[in-house]
Length: 593
Image (cartoon, rainbow, N blue to C red; front, side, top):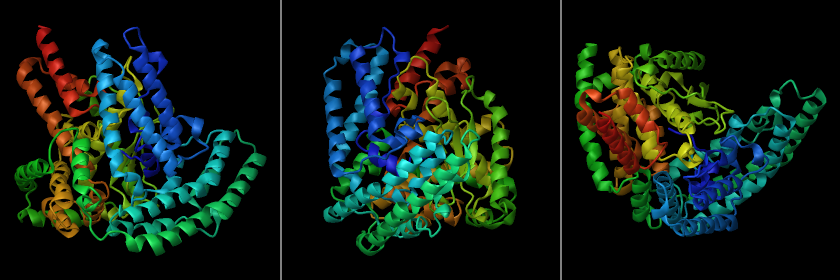
């Protein structure tokens, strides 16, 4: 899963296509249309300006001293700017463009049209989730450099501005109450403890103070003392009181009025909203009913594979008994967070040298393995990936959840690492940044069906890499594939077919050996982000289908390493664009003799 902090996501809800559409002058050529690429340039700048958080995550430090403007006026302005950008795009004659520019045009248009279509659903009226919001704003410090005096001064300015952000978020929540656009109470019950974690008596214990605990050698002691004193003052006088007020509002006025239901169809215009999300995340025209049926078929197929691998382990009980064994036997768990982190890092080093078996092109950008911050670990997923800076100044990071190591089985670590790190998300994002002569929107774009489909497909590349030599690791791969197939059933079940949360949890546990902690967190994630989880299996099935097509049509000419490179060389695109690209690649390989 790609980590995309909620504050950045909120600011980008109306400018997502803009922030993904960079065009560096260094990559321009005579074949590129200057009007089209000027639009890309200007929209990129707008995206960075309007979402300073996203600029920070991209490694652009120009806006590190501020947050996004979450006022209703600013949101309306961003939405109007999207509509204006689409009008400017449509004023360009697509037929006159080169093939490369037509791909850029089509992708930019796809994003903008959907950004504008979703405006009517007013997603900004739910500005807080159990996985992120103002209560986790300190998390952005993970990607900031803190290498110069200005870096620390910028962070102080952000701290000073934080009460304004919290006030703006509160106004959005109040508007959501008026409109009946509210999140499910079962998720919001997790939030009070997160807010309370920001209310500290000692400002030096605040998560926002963490950057001031360590300084680079170039910062003088007098400056360190001054920065620390100012940070403690701002946290005590401004930040903590703002969170205390926010906590009171949330607990006393907002939480009691959140909705008891979990289904997206229960929101205003909810059926249309969920139908839109299903199309948006999968980049297809599949309906909820069609996706549900695909999920049921895949669940049945994978259960059959599970029975075969269970037999290879010598286990004599039922599949349900085997699940219980995998969830509970101490042999499958590390005892401490430190042991678990060491094991993840060792596993990554085991994977690295095998990558040449399935790729000809290895990206240059490195990656590291980090623990998920303690303040969000109990309420978040097993792991996620944070892309590196677009200018190469920060590596990618594979974040792993060390909370309750007794709930983190060893048999899931291999497929998880293949998905989140290499050759999954890290290869996808790092290779994208290296696409030559391409606009930045192709180098940095993120379509969930492509990106998460690639991650799930990457888990299966472990077989060609010779990594699944232990039947328990092989079973872990099947558990992870089943996990994504189950999503098709439970996400559509809860949001369009009247399934309860309890029914979804039971269905998940019946079909996959994921631990209780993970199952509940996953189901709550699908409740909180309707439709997103549909993209993984749909994307993987398309990539696998295209691989089978290429192998069938090319016969002895088929090279798996070349195919995998070909999938990554476009950058992230809608699935229909990927299919056109692979079909052209197959035709070119055929004609090459």
